Image 1 (cartoon, rainbow, N blue to C red):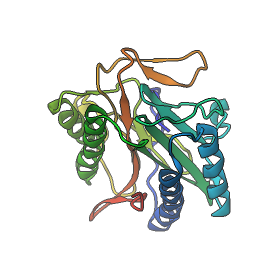
Image 2 (spheres, rainbow, N blue to C red):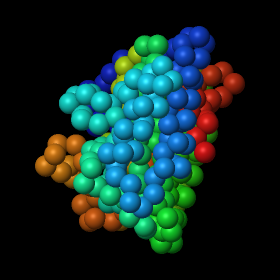
Image 3 (cartoon, rainbow, N blue to C red):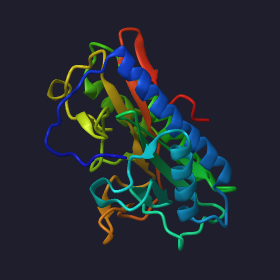
Image 4 (cartoon, one colour):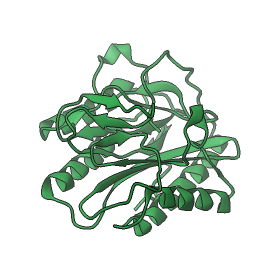
Length: 261
């Protein structure tokens, strides 16, 4: 679940054993997203996806992280086509051939959080949507490559933005990635756009970062709908969203949600 830029939150470094618990939490998230990839098809409602995700989490000893978070009503954020993030599951929203669906899921496991997201094609999609998904996913990995000890958070941000804008797309600026641990949103914020290297924290071993590019086919501008949650592109262009939770180690970045297909 993305974070709206706000006051700085505390950066909390994790021990090796804590990162192992977080790996398990994120493997549960990844397992749920893999299951939803198989089930997300034309004719299925986003409410059904939400129910399956919650059942999966509980069967694996975890609880949904988003349900009730600041009043959010679902276990999943399900965002369709021009919806960027934080879409609310509904029995009335039925997937259709040609849609793209961003699914963001988090769990709490043994006191720690896991958080990841994917964008899925529902049946056959058009070439512009497919390319948008490809570039967004690539930008996530460009960012992850920079999650190294000694770099700054802005190195992640700039790598994402450079890749996205090189291909003519826009990164969302109103919502950002974040640290994660015993809280769903910890410091530091991880923007998907450069704000200047010296203005961002140095990356240290023990950080766990939820890196999550949100990329629009049109302009970067977004707005929040009347439900107070669902974020859409102002120009109604499609948007894609990919996310991994990543531990920073002396040996380099480790993707904790690496089981996502």
